[in-house]
Length: 107
Length: 116
Image 1 (cartoon, rainbow over the protein chains, first blue to last red):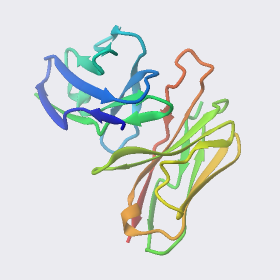
Image 2 (cartoon, rainbow over the protein chains, first blue to last red; image 1 turned 120 degrees about the vertical axis):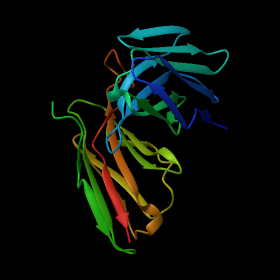
Image 3 (cartoon, rainbow over the protein chains, first blue to last red; image 1 turned 180 degrees about the vertical axis):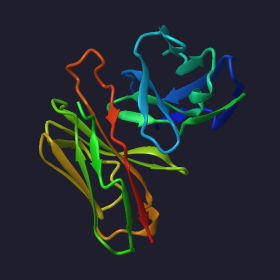
Image 4 (cartoon, rainbow over the protein chains, first blue to last red; image 1 turned 90 degrees about the vertical axis):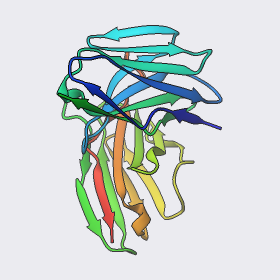
């Protein structure tokens, strides 16, 4: 079956670094996405990985290991506005979303 | 570009009534997706279209749900009859496989549906 696992909630401190993990089991793989979703708003695209390794985009980085079925999203220099849910999604023949990780930032 | 447009933003209806949700994708995008999001089940793909043709509707919960895309700039998701368990936020998203960020989906603001 298709399954995407990520922690339900995490808490971190403003200015710190946090890593949000995602593991997946899918019959095929054509890319992994991370989306950010603020409360009451729509998901917005953060990153896309199709090859193994680290993709860096400003304060956000995303890592992929296809052999391990594993990805993480790394957020540096956390800001209060980073308080949101972070959704991991895998594209097989269609895109499947995880249930998201709610990230709380403490001042 | 105005982005993906959805209407209405909020809908409150009574059980048994017909509900129609509307979506206008980003101009030029050839894929359109309908999602449902609840706390319990997260974001679920209901159906998606490519060039106005339904490709995969395996996520549509049951026959009470139907979706159409009569042209490249408009799609509807209809629930008839509606039930309280259909209460959720329904998102429409579009994407363009011809762009460098192919598969990146752009989401509309969503329709919050409450069925009493």
